Image (cartoon, rainbow, N blue to C red; front, side, top):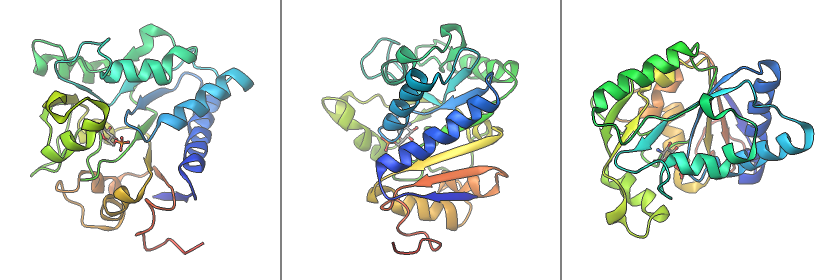
Length: 247
Ligand code: GLP
């Protein structure tokens, strides 16, 4: 695993933008796997800036988002669909017909999950998958479990995740209890995985993911087995890694 240590959230975001912009410059028709949450917000601002100032081109790119809440319509202010449009898609030249999310409103979740996998496969697979990490080391919405989920599926959110995500809603009671998420296998098939972590509340999850036992109880620990992972951490999130030397 390649680890890029940065001092601040801003620097982490800039480094991440360079990695994704580099991917698009080398392969303009890249298939990107994208993530939500507060972690990638400034990365997306950097990508928008690169688009507007130096012409970073999304015209041939395709995107698949990691996850979506069950029961929220696309235009719901809290949906990940809306988040991605407000933070990135509305400000760059990505074609609308090349933007994909798992449909959290699908009547038949199992069918939707299969269709999502088929759409990813038909696009040629994911070239670069962006990930944040939950405080319990979840990736996408793959929560700690007895086994690694292989493909896209409907998942029941852990209470800790509901509480962590309640900051985006007016109360924890409004956070959906379920989501559709790419599985660990879906994520793992990406050719390059870029994992971002910022803030002290992620430090233990990062340490366990990078240096701990590989176990579905720490979903991100599976990334130790992937041949091409770039982890970009700020000072606080990387503080417990053994390779981290004090500045
Ligand atoms: C959410 C998302 C994840 C995200 C994680 C961390 O539940 N499903 O994709 O990486 O939590 O979020 P944040 O970046 O806000 O800490």
